[in-house]
Image (cartoon, rainbow, N blue to C red):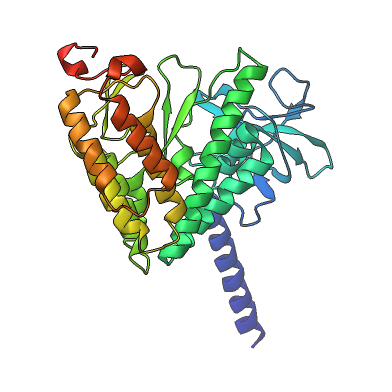
Length: 362
């Protein structure tokens, strides 16, 4: 009996050792505790302050487990480690010995250069601050979990607020520091669904656009029809690739920043009619419809406007809009449109240009 127990014990010990060797021979997984960081990469060091110019305290050992203290540097640093390039923030950590310092964000990658899910939120916090990063995270969660058209409308409103905040943040950064270098934001859609980033031609600011195609795909998964219809309408206004660039399809850009209204082609009236039909249903997208209606009216009534089509075509479409029974138009809208209709009788008196396509100025 004793021999049997000894043999069994030896077998169990061998099995444990074999399992241990098998586990250690494989690539270790990221720790399940988000506050723990395993150092997978050689060459990383602990610094006294964020940034490679700070004092290096010591080298970190591969396999060392660090505690993430939740603080992120307010900047990203491009660095090359072992021949691999990164652009990441710095993270405040505590070592098992109780040392507190900063480690480069590439610590969140494993040996196969796969990044942990914590990398992108860290970049967000570094670039835009904890508050805006939290807003983006909240929006992303609400977008992904939206199951009704009303919930998606609420997420969309959050999204528009986030875009305004992003634009304001980058403008402020440039105003404070003219040497501020715009970061590469190609990864932003991974944490901000529905966004399209585009740097302006001067390379000194970003445009943040809405990808209505992404929203339409999400709308197809929700209950209710109002989100499908709203995003269908939006796609019709930006038909080339479903992305809300600077100008809808009733505006033509001939040179960078030089635009002309296409009033006279029927595009404005068509957009307003379709918008009005949606507005009559009284859905959660009404504020958005009003915003797009105002954009269309502004294109028609802008001071010193330039119109691509002939004066006769412009007057014909505008008169059609004025005679319509569109409920989305306010009294102020109608007054502005009728005033513009009168001004088009003598456009030169009001600084208006018609038939620009023919090179005419009157």
